[in-house]
Length: 348
Image 1 (cartoon, rainbow, N blue to C red):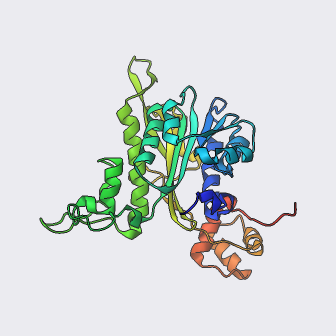
Image 2: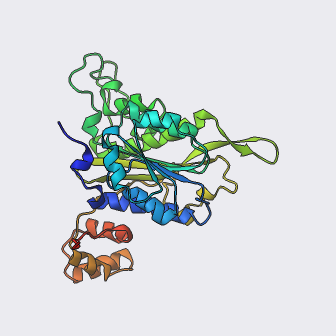
C-alpha cells in the first residue's frame, strides 16, 4: 500500500510548486498595501513541511494558523511545526471545517495531493459558504485527465456525457461549470458524446473549479453590507489564481477572494496593483503553466546576469553566453525568475 505523500515527496524541493507558492504570496503581499491582514488566520494542510505556513507568517505577518492533519500523523506534524502560532488538528478535514468558528477572515489553501472527489467538493463548499468577506480561498488537486474517466466499461454511461472526463467533472461540481468554449460539438442521436481533449483538459478543469467557486458563493446569497441607498450588497467570489504545473504529476491550483459584489471601492479589483493578468473575454485570471526545467547553479547565475532585460534581448544575450536551453524554457525563466528557487546542500 502506498503511504502518505510526505513520506515520498519533500514538498519544499519541487521547483514548480515553489514558484506557484511564491506567485500566490506575491499577489497577497501586494494586496497587503490596501488590505488589513491583522485579523486574518491561515488554514491549510501543513503536513510535515509547513512551506505555505512559513510564507504566510513571514510575508503576511499572520500569527494565527491552523493545520489540518490526519489523526495518525498529527503528532509528527506537531513536532515539525516551525512556529508556536500554528495549531495542528488531527482530524478529518470535513469534520473539522463543519465545527470551525468563522469569526475572522481566512487565507485558506486546501492543497490536496489526490484527485477531485466528493469530500474535496464538500470541504471547499463549507469554506465558501461560511468564510467572512476578504477571505482568500485556494484549492489544489490532481488534474490528470485519465483519473476523471470512468473506470471499466459501464454500460449505462458508455458513449454518453457522463462517460466522458468532462461529464465526470461536471457531475462532481454541478451543472453550469463547463465553459462554452470547452463544450464538444453536438452529435447525432446514438453517436458517442464528445469530450474535452487531453491538450485542453487542464485549463478546462481549472475554469470549471473557478466556476464552481463563484456559483457556490453566489448561491449562498450572503451579504457584504448595505449601500448608502439602503440596498443589500451581496458577497461574490473574485477569481485571482489559475495555475497548473507538473512536478511528477499534473496539478491544478485555482483560487480567489470572497469580497463585495460592488466594484465601487473594492480593493481586490485593482488588477494592476495586484500584478494580475486577465483574459479580456471572460475576465478570468490568465491560465499559467509553470513547468520550468531544473537549472544548475551556474545556469541560473548566467541567466540572472542577463536580467532585467526585454524578453527578445534576454534570449539573445543568454544564448551568447553559452546557455543551451530551448527558447520556450528561456521565456518561462524570463517571466518567473523572481520566484525561481535554488537548492543546495548546507552542512549542519
